[in-house]
Length: 220
Image (cartoon, rainbow, N blue to C red; front, side, top):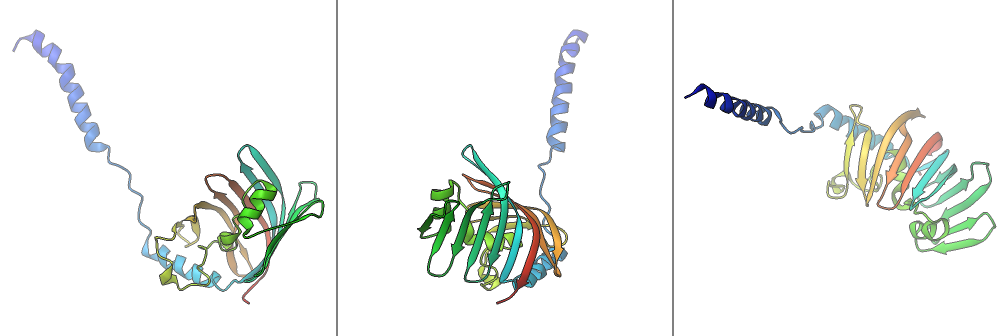
């Protein structure tokens, strides 16, 4: 073969070799499976906090939805049958009081006018302009899948939710009921490790909950 032909072929040979090398080395990243130890810790943690049926929570809430937003204070009293959620403006004025019982759900606004609906999601959407996912929020705020405190763990199959957790067994992400929940920080409260910074995202709403204090933790 002439020197001229070799001169023109060499770059293509080099490019071919480089492409082959890249193809061999570009291995798709695979997320490591959770270790058996962390799975056991996760199960133990969920079992421990399953005993929590009531709490009082004080903190802050931020909302972004369809170009609108809200931020302010949050005070929430919860037990197995009732919820009482007070929302405050950044200046401390009460914006809304949401009360849920077995019979009804009502929202009273800053002017003292009351509204009701079949569920809290519909009620908050129509009155506040954004949806508060109260159906699952109590469990999610505690760092567990919705329903895990009242159902046998074998019934909560992976078809109902997806979750990830850290080496301590604490949830880091949870996908359930059309919401993605991210847990960015935990703190110890009365012997429990509970979330202190929670991000909740749906197709329409981004919520941020910052928990300052947990209180009245216990079973019914």
